[in-house]
Image 1 (cartoon, rainbow, N blue to C red):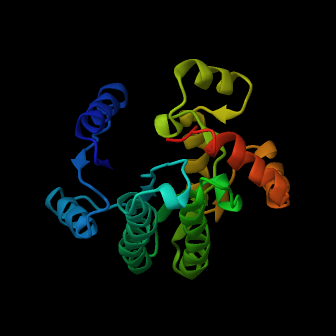
Image 2 (tube, rainbow, N blue to C red; image 1 turned 120 degrees about the horizontal axis):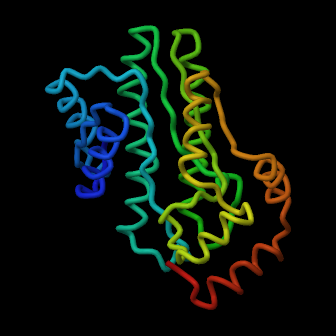
Length: 232
């Protein structure tokens, strides 16, 4: 288990071991570090671990106009969503191809179909993950390995910064899905070697309607949310 947040990572690893009796090994590292992949490879080697499944789930979110976003934040989007996902997938895809087995699950977002103001970096980098993973899926298909991209709608995590009461309401009305429920379905799709997983019929239907949303509607989002200072 890999994350930049040390204490939550170790707590999660220990809880998995306590609840399920499965050894979970935490490794704290910043995936935006250019040396992250080589450090992960070295760590696995020292632990004598050979991966069968790889899940690239690390991500960041920001709701702010591009011109008001710092260059450091923009670089973080690219480093984490694009470079880290690409290089980790590359490293393990090469090993899986040689072994003739292995599964990769990369996390995109339903927003990858949504060119929306305030989400330029998030949606564009998530779109990259989807297209990249779909392409990798076809490249691995003849070698007994696979790459699956998950493109969820809203998930009840801290990523969007919703207050607890609003998050509970969103789950109740079905606007977002609990992470354990989504993770279960996404992992099952990966194990089956599927190329893509989108949770829920409503989300699949929404892709079409979001794609044809007129410019005036997108501008209303900008003016009502971004221009009124509802940013993070």
